[in-house]
Image 1 (cartoon, rainbow, N blue to C red):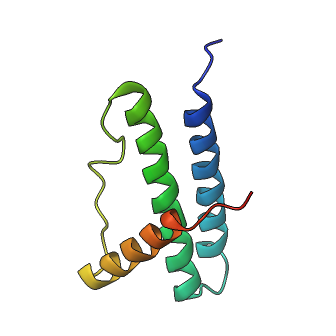
Image 2 (cartoon, helix red, strand yellow):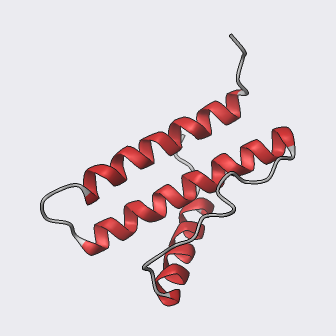
Length: 94
């Protein structure tokens, strides 16, 4: 078995957790738009962190580079990106 980079593995775990949380929220019978947008932003942040960890280790491009955001208006995308960036720059709990 190959040993995975600890940073890549940690980023993968955060991405997996974010995806599970997103699926739980959007798969529920009553979907709150605000909550759905928040968890979508968490998935985007986790995906960006994963892609960055891969880039730092391998210089390979993001595996998400070709993905589009169907159904979202440009203003919504911009708002989510700002929220994602704010979350990314927030001091981490110790």
